[in-house]
Figure 1 (cartoon, rainbow, N blue to C red):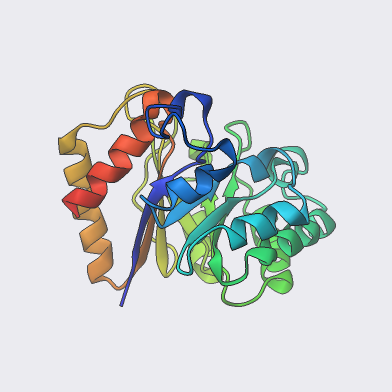
Figure 2 (figure 1 turned 90 degrees about the vertical axis):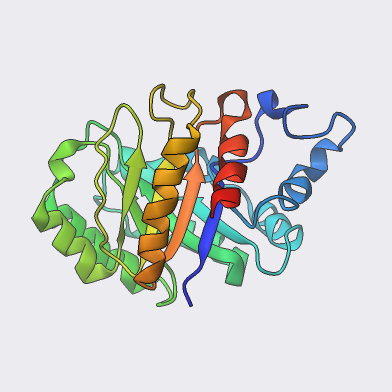
Length: 243
């Protein structure tokens, strides 16, 4: 039976103090509080620098049995190396992420808007990804340049069972394309990037899509990245109620 995971992109934001976290709640226990409301989170800090082994062990130990972490892959691979000569940095990142064991969900590759489509690079990188990773792992690709929106790219992703990330934002292409045995959705804010709240109607429309995917026996992961004013928390909770 397919599963639905709904959470936020990151869980530590200064402006979430008092909006989400109680005033007297210990700062070192924010993840534990978050887990009282959601069963998944998308780790964003892994994109900027690779946390140490203790950090990953801590995340694992501090979360409930069925909690799931989506992990954003280092920008060194997607933005600096641009998928070229990535075997060693990918091996290092993957080894660290695997510390999360059965709580490790999809690994997210977020590409920069300036990076244009290159099918050969994608195929070569896909082979490296699968060669190093356990077969049970899932991978999602968020492209922010329209040149990637073509059938050739979709077919490559399908071949590797890599998910095309459905992106909702005012800046990047929104394509409902299913290329894997799961669906990955990122909600960045429909009107203002990272800064607008979704309306009930918008969330109801998303819920319809989720139910359609679920009927196709697809697991669905949805992460709200409109963190301004705590909108991500509010919208994630509302979507859960609608579903």
